[in-house]
Amino acid sequence: MTPAARTRRLGTTATFYDRIADVHNLALKLNGYKDSVAKFLKSLNLEVGPETMVLDSGSGTGIVTLAFHQAGFRPKKTIAFDLSRNSLKLALGQARKEKKIDPGNIAAVQGNILALPFADASFDIVLSCGVLEYVPLDEGLRETARILKPGGKLVLLPVKPSLVGSVLELLYNFKIHPLEDVRKISQRYFKIVGNYKFPIAEPIAWSKAIFLLEKK
Ligand SMILES: C[S@@+](CC[C@H](N)C(=O)[O-])C[C@H]1O[C@@H](n2cnc3c(N)ncnc32)[C@H](O)[C@@H]1O
Image (cartoon, rainbow, N blue to C red; front, side):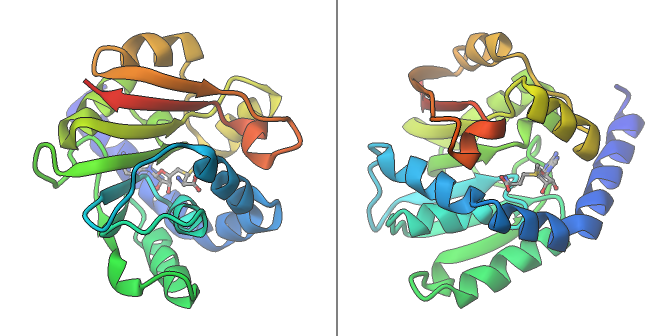
């Protein structure tokens, strides 16, 4: 893709999510997706303490950020990062309403996941759910690895090839990466620590595959 085409694509995606932020957020709340993500995150053996820095990369309206806190984790700071300003506004608004979340611990930053405005090795944990589908996989994983500390964790929830995935692909205009590519390319930068299967009754399992990766 040419640089101009890439810039156009970023603009189209941002405008699309700015328009649908409210509806998208409501849909995810109604179908129990946030609770399901929280349940899954809680089951991971993540080390989170008062100095832990977390990035929710492609946070959208902050469902995964909220789920992370709902799961009981209390990091120093969680940064919700997305192209869509309206989605980030919603994320911050919701975080302020949550009694268990100290609003000072959540920040929102707008930008492109392929050019993260953060120093090398500045995060302990990155949460990435349904966003790498918008970018070339190797570039997305390489840039994510750059800002993670060695030994830092990437909780990766790519959209999985499935009937639901194909419907989402059309609705949201992204491209599902074959899971074989996710496994192969992620190992250039990460060690695969876990690849989980969730019961199909869990909303998280309808559309997502689940990997826990450790930065090499
Ligand atoms: C399917 S939504 C997922 C949102 C959230 N992670 C969740 O699970 O609810 C995809 C999000 O990725 C964002 N996005 C797409 N391409 C991006 C890019 N290059 N940089 C940053 N965010 C991007 C969109 O704005 C949108 O909020």
